[in-house]
Image 1 (cartoon, rainbow, N blue to C red):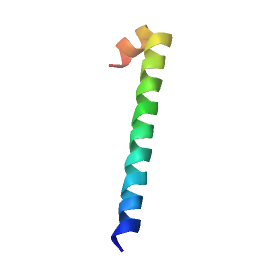
Image 2: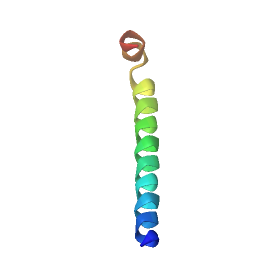
Image 3: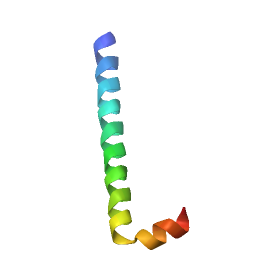
Image 4: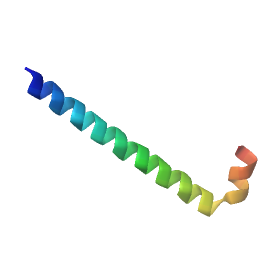
Length: 42
């Protein structure tokens, strides 16, 4: 019963990486859209 757990772990890692890349692209997009707002927030 190690194969199903390994599959679940691989799929979870894949989803986690996808979400991480998506959030990074969103942050860069917001930086390009409103740099002054980003500077005020952080």
